[in-house]
Length: 143
Image (tube, rainbow, N blue to C red; front, side, top):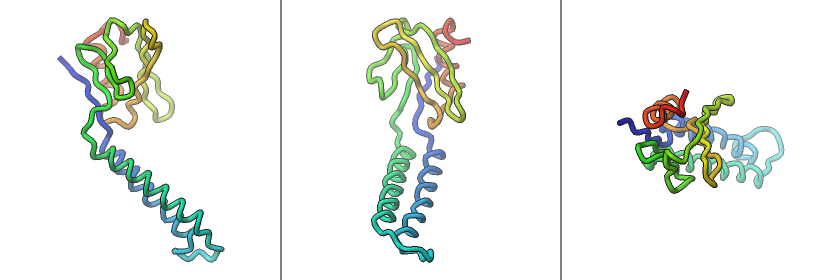
């Protein structure tokens, strides 16, 4: 049986961490550490640097995290955000959605939960693998 288990994508999050650290150069320039010929704005510059370092820290934590963010198996669908798994019998519809680079699979339930989605964009396993797992356990849901 196929099990879909997705974690944060290491290459994507390392790239995001590097990009935010590169952006901190703007903060150093605004603070006056890097000469630019314009009036230094230390409060603005250091706020930019702090924000970039904080964001890079979050991206690095995600890059090295081994904690699953979503799981599809014989019991149903689980995400960290949902907490408890949604049983297959409670899922009435599956809709893949693409918006720009975003790849989201939306699930509709018959119960009080309504709808929920799994955004696979920043995971190490994408929409194709998620839909393949859904097809294996509930072929009637996936087209």
